[in-house]
Each structure stands twice: as structure tokens, then as C-alpha cells.
Length: 429
Image (cartoon, rainbow, N blue to C red; front, side, top):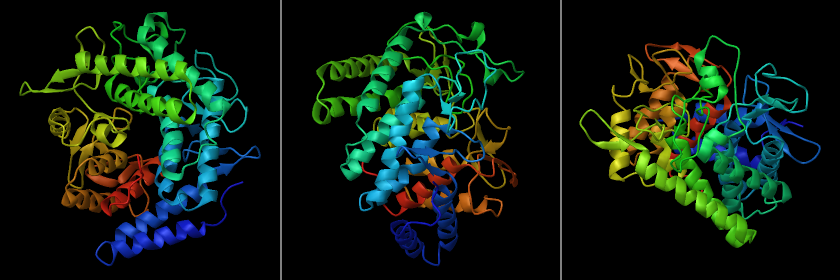
């Protein structure tokens, strides 16, 4: 069952945002209302078992990452709307149902219909749309479960499926601290090198240094080096959430200690190995490392990225190393930073050169205290929507009418969250 009408609580919230935007920012309100309604009316599919399946948009599958970001702004309303909270709780339960099927998969089918990338050389089954292992795919469902609790007080999402899924997540994180002994491999028959892993599906070699390995980035593109630092940062944050959950909500000492040990080891790995220097010789965070001295200086548009660290709960926006990193990445020193006639910001290897992503622009806005900068970015986003009143995956900085993905719910909701952020409306962490 999908939403046929916008819930009254959501209509009221949209009206409130419209009033806050006023005449000066009427275009923000128009895009906000279009995007906020679009998510509920086009992507939500309630299941007979009480769980919730969320389409990512124009691909008929559910990503663990995207689905979390799609509903996150609604947590603000779910405090007062039990039905909305129920829908989000149903999503958490669906996410952990999938994680229990396979914690290495990133995207799943609504039913066991065998759709998706079934010819990939990895352990596929009919539930799995794609099996690219990405740390963030396991972080996001934990984040959603915890933020639902923090914002509404609900605990029904912390069921047996959640606990068994968390055990699998902790096992995978620990296993991938020594990737040489991992059972996971991935090869796709393709000419696009970003869609497959080298070294017979194992990826580039890494040294065991406490960090946990990821085959792919949040863009679903292959990592150059196996230790993806922003995703390791996100892992540190959600492992902290698990410490709280297994200390206070579901007291379980063994899981508490396992989460704590992993958190400490990964954090130490970030401090010792997750850094590099920019052209000025300053100490900044690396995007990827291999634990053997190699590092990439870059940022990608997909979250988690380095720009997103304080948004995700890793450090503060005024941390000196973060500020140095941010300044470097929002410059030509980042190979995926583009500037043109209509926009400037971070793009991705996933889309053509000179295409920037609304997701990255929204994240840039949510990680600054500067209201004028937030306003500039929001104005840029509505001016580059190609007249659709919705966001896209990426667009050409010199011609916003050239864009990828007409229906991309994650991007829509990141825009909405930035509008809310501008008016100091934020999800409780």
C-alpha cells in the first residue's frame, strides 16, 4: 500500500515551511513542497507484514542507504504523528530483514523476484538487487533505528531481527578489519572499471591497521584503496549508538563490548592512518587509504563523504582539521570539485565531468554555520532544477538542463533537509 494522500501532519508542516519562506523565498517553498510530497506519494510501499519498502526512485529497488536518507527529515514530524513513526519503524524492520539475508548487499528487491544484477560473480540470490559491499549500507539502518528512538521514544524497532542483524554487522566489520581473510569477492562483467573490483574481486591489497574495509563507495563505485575514511567515521558514530542501545535499551554486555572494541580500533585507525597532507603541507583527512602509506586526496558527492563528518556526528564543524579538510575539498585540489556558469560544488566519478550533485551541495550547506552561505546554496539549487521543482542526481555546471536521474528521492530529501536546517529545524541526534 502506498500513500494516496498527504497526511494532515505533513500538510501542516509543509504549510509552516511555506510561511517561513515567505515571498522572498517562494521558490524554496515550491520545491520543498514538491519534493516533500513526492517522497511519500511515489516511493513508499507499505507491506502486509507491517514493514515498509522504499523505492530509490527510477530504479525499482531499495537501497539501505538511500531509504534512510529519504525518511530522515520526517522524523521531525513523527514525534507528533504515530502513523508516520509506524511507517519509519516499518522501514527499519525491513532494512534489518534484508541485512539478515545478506549483510554484504547494498540494494534489495521488494519480493524474491530475481531482479537486478543477477549475473554478477558473487553470492547473489533472488532478494538481492545488487551486492556491492559498502560500509555505509550497514551504518544507515543503525542510524535510523537510533534516531527514531531519540526523536519519538519508540523501541519496537529493536526487535529480534534488529539484534541478529547487528550481530551480523559487527561480524562483518570485524572480518573486514583483516580483508585478506574475508569471504567476500565481487566481479562484474563490464567495461566500466568503477563497477567491479580488481585482484579477482578482492580489491586493492590493504594492511591490517584497525580500519574496516569497504569494496565500494556510497556512489556504488569501487574504492581505489580499501579503507574509505568517511565510512569508517560513520562506523565510529553508529558503533557509539550501539553502545547506548546495548547499555540502556537492550542491555547485553557481550554486544556492548564488541561494539566498543570495534569503535576504539577504528577510531585509532583513522587517527593513525586516515590522514594526508594538502598542497600547503597541512594535515587533513584522506578520502581513502590502504594502511600501507597510499592515500587519495578527494571527496565524492555521495554521503558519507568527508564534508559530511559533523552532520553524521563525527567531530564538530569548528574542528581545525575538519576545517582544513573542508577548505581543501571545496577547491580545485579536489579532482571532483567543479565550477561553472551556474554552479560550483562537488561531483563524482559516477557521473560525467563538470556535473555537480545537489546531495553534495545540500551537505555543504548543512555543515556551515553561515546563514548567507546556506541561502546561496538554496538559491543555487532551485535555480538549477531545470524547471522540474525537484532535485536530480547530478547536473552540468554550465547547463543545468543537462542532468542525470529525473526521479531521485535521496536528492529531493537532502534539499528538504537543508531548507529545514536554514530555519533551525533539525532531527534530534
